[in-house]
Amino acid sequence: METTPLLTRPKKKSLWSRCKFTKFRKKELCSRVIYLGQLPDEEYPPNHICNQKYSLITFLPLVLYEQFRFFLNLYFLVMALSQFIPSVRIGYLYTYWGPLCFVLTVTLFREAIDDFRRYRRDKEVNRQKYERIVLDSTGNDYRPFVMESVPASALRVGDIVMLHKGQRVPADMILLRTNETMGTVYIRTDQLDGEIDWKLRIPLPSTQKLPTDAHLLDINAQIFIEKPEKDIHSFIGTCTRLDEEETDSLEIENTLWSGCVVASGQATGLVIYTGSETRSVMNNATPRSKVGRLDLQVNDLTKVLFVAVIFLSFLMIVLKGFNGPWYGFMFRFVLLFSYIIPISLRVNLDMGKAFYSWTIQRDKKIEGTVMRSTTIPEELGRIQYLLADKTGTLTKNEMVFQKLHLGNALFDRDNFHEIETLLTQHVTNQSSPLATPSGERPPSFVSPRAAWQVVAALALCHNVTPVYETSDDVDEAQSDLTSSVMSESCGGAVPQQQLCDYQASSPDEVALVKWTDMVSIG
Image (cartoon, rainbow, N blue to C red; front, side, top):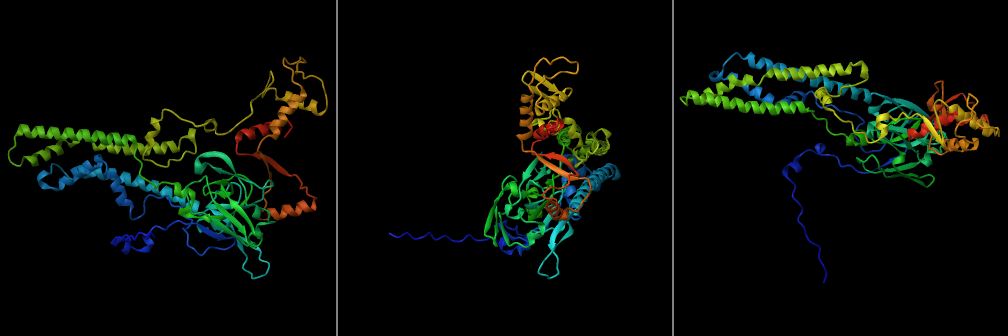
């Protein structure tokens, strides 16, 4: 018996879904294909960062809504509005509207300052200059590249951007090349995931082997990118060289997420996600108005006092008697007893928060502190415990080698020179025992060979990479060509007029290697 497919009636669309404009519909995220050196035809979000809570149109309505959704402010608003009714008016209008308008003015002014500060921070980030590699429009067969300085907001999907040490990554990118000798780059992701350990990033093998960045515009490469996701710890994609039929798989080690900082060397990357499609923006929550616990407690206390006011007013009506329009008299009693809930409390709270925020930012003991929100500074006084997930959170990952236990011997910062003496004896094949400055033999004898093996193990068993930086400022765009020419002319040796530094994802390893360098084995 043949089975026939079930016939289902298509779901009817609502009138709103059929009539609303297409431009208001949320764009569906999908994977993309980028050809190296070519801008895609599809339209992607602009690389513009906006963390503002309000606009010129929504500022006043949203701020008023946030204020009057609390019972305290709503209570004073109702009391002030009641004075427009002649039958229940008990005083002058300014006695009710004056304090309320002052409170609202202070709140509007504070919210405007906070949002303006966010606007300035966004403007500073969007205006940061970056070097974009583009073709020189000359029409020659040999197409040299030029470095174009553009703001971060002008970057688009498909742009090739050159990043230098200390620069923030402006958009989600794929690492194509680096000028580092080891062929790797370290980045800091503390603004993305809160971890200040350096992360290792590896460029694509098919593009890293190119002589210079200019050759990135000459190859025929197709890069497949997955659709934008929130997960910052995974990534899937492929890079195919169509001219050589070579394919590289893309993983998280090949990515540079927006908000990261290049910690070493120079990196050249391809922009794959911009604006609202970047990992950092997709993981950011919508800005909201923050409310402190003190404000919530005051709001709850206001409700209790309001119940007391209603009870006292009803008691007065009972004593007076329910004669005539008693409900009008009861409301007048509520107005008379409304001073039990002082509006000056709200004024003092707002002024105190503004003063706390001002003093915190200008405290010389904590210089550099920035108040992101002036609505909850008092919450810092509620902190009783600090929970740290690891020791690096408390030590700021500043590790210094202090002591070395070798057998029964203990070496610390005061006698590290004895380690140097043992190493010298091992290198020079001396077998004389180690002696202290007083000429006495140390209580625990350590052979030079044992000291050499321990220190050599610390100096070799690690993932630390030496970084050499020149003291003079050179043109980073031509550093690859210059270094290759000098290397060929000098037979592979470049004059060492450089400063050496160490970098690794673990500060513990850096501390160990720096110590071995200090005892003359690095």
